[in-house]
Image (tube, rainbow, N blue to C red; front, top):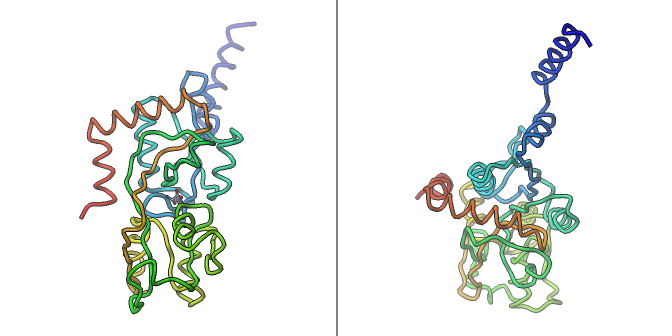
Length: 258
Ligand code: ARG
């Protein structure tokens, strides 16, 4: 082929490059050896993850994952899929990393692998400000909401039993909180920092949180498919680096500065 057609070909590759979509860029980077991992979440859990009106998923977990990706030299593609689909897509290998304020627990450890813990949490009880509830025992016989499939559900079951008639599972915490505002349930059990965030976001709803020592300490980890040791090592190495270089603290302060 002549030199001219070669120049034309190179020229058009250049043009394609200019107009490349995010996906094409990702492909190009993959060719250069930069891996892209798909991160799935349930973006109904501020300040760990929520969706902006633009569709962008933001929050503590996203900053954390992006910071780890940066120090480890990989790319991430973050998707809000919902809680159960997140679990499924990690099991089936459709996605690589679950980042959703996921509590590391023994039951989940049988099906998934987790990084070292990156955040400490516990369950709190969200009630209307004028509620007389001061402990989980005060909820006996009443309707209690939580996000289905989470440690909030487990905490309620632990106190009131698996067949407790007042246990009401919801697809996410905001839906449960809405049902409390309409009076269908008297309380919502959920992760402390997130219920705290709802208090801040809805000061006009007259809500308060109640703490109870019966709820155990929990620790969040990033989740991968069981046996994906290579990715787990990458994530743990990155987590260690950002804890050492101050980046983790910076992210923490951004969301939890007093
Ligand atoms: N930490 C709790 C759990 O692991 C709740 C997590 C819910 N996360 C979310 N993004 N909706 O069960």
